[in-house]
Amino acid sequence: MSEVLLVVGLLVAVFVGYNIGGATTGPAFGPAVGANVITKLAAAALMSIFFFLGAITIGPAVVTTLGEELVTDTSVFTLEANVAVLFFIGGALFLGNRAGVPASTSMTAVGAIAALGLATGELDWAVLGEIVIWWVVAPIIGFWVSGVIGRYFYPAINAWVAIEDGEGEEPMLSVSLEGVVPTVRTPDGLDRRGTAGAAVVVVIGCLMAFSSGTSNIANAIAPIYATGDVGMIPLILIGSAAVAVGCFTIARRTLDTLGNDITNLPLTAAIVVAVVASSIVIVLSAIGIPASFVVVATMSIIGLGWGRATRTTTLTDARRGEETAVSVGALTAEEEGEPAPEIGEEETDDIPSASDLFNPSTTARVILMQNVVPIISTVGAFLTFRFLPIFGF
Image (cartoon, rainbow, N blue to C red; front, side, top):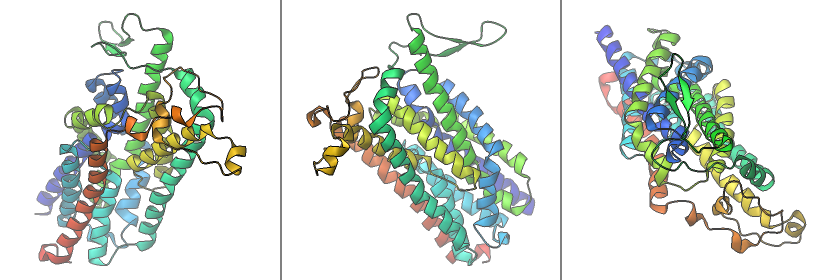
């Protein structure tokens, strides 16, 4: 019976990994696909590779936190409980993916595991408190770092990078398999600067995929690892393979949402946000904290827009009490490659509103599902473990 439950648990873990692939590919490569820099197929391949690299290098630290430290007694991770935990994680993420929304896999997984610990009286509140504190602090850090970049560095970065959306049906970067060694091919007419810009977008996507692997692999395999029946490395291989399947299949929905529907975020801004958010997630993963990339990235977008908008006011003007019209839409004030006015020389009327940047209906749907998915996972798991005697708690 235990062997059957272990197989079932592994299958459910694969289901979770499949949905993680669907939920995380969009945030990582949505901008690149939306700008026609690479195809969805190429995005899936790169996501699979760099997710695995993050999972195998830094990922074990987060697996240990969720699988050994979040509960005081790992014996609560019975095979029956593992199946239920992974079912609620995967089921909740599946709902988000079906809606085309990349839900927070870290919050969903922590919620389900914490619900198990709470229902059994084995929840380590100190570890949960540390995780939650970082969930609050990390977006604040992302906001302020991006705010400083937006005010003092973003216009210069925007003028230097000058990345423009790819035109036509052919992607800006593709891989040719005609020779012995695969080579990267660009369409005719794409200059060196355009090629470099496209490469930057792809490299940043790879960084995001790596950061996703460092944090999200634990969401699929931590409960199984806690039982001691399967080793860390085999589980990472299984989980990463499942993520790859999700990248090549269900991720197409989130790629459309993040690449085309939710926002007209300039590619330069997307690059800055990706670097800031990915760096924060990688650092937190290294110390064993499962972090939500989507939440950090959202606050980074707001911070970057706020910083860019404050360029209409100098510090002297601010000390005099002059108000600043702040809008995230300030990120669309100039095109890529266009130099911005000096601080204090720009008129507030030149700053677009946030409605020029975000699609209101899609943004509302994303925000709603970002909160609903973790709640479904947490509440469903708690009620199951608390009131169904099948688990023997």
